[in-house]
Length: 90
Image (tube, rainbow, N blue to C red):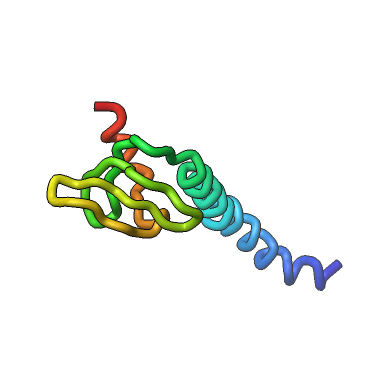
């Protein structure tokens, strides 16, 4: 019983860390993967570096976007989910 009491604070710390740090991060990663897989040609997007454009072509891991200055090829992971959602609401 005394050994359990010694480890109880560590167990409680792990539970708190899991629910406040690990679980929300896993949920966010799942949402970002879903967002990346739901992209389609013609969607208006904003990259994490702030470049605005429209999707012209899609591949497995890359996309081609049309901007005012031409076409750019980049990774799907470079698209900002939050900024693109805010742009879509406008």
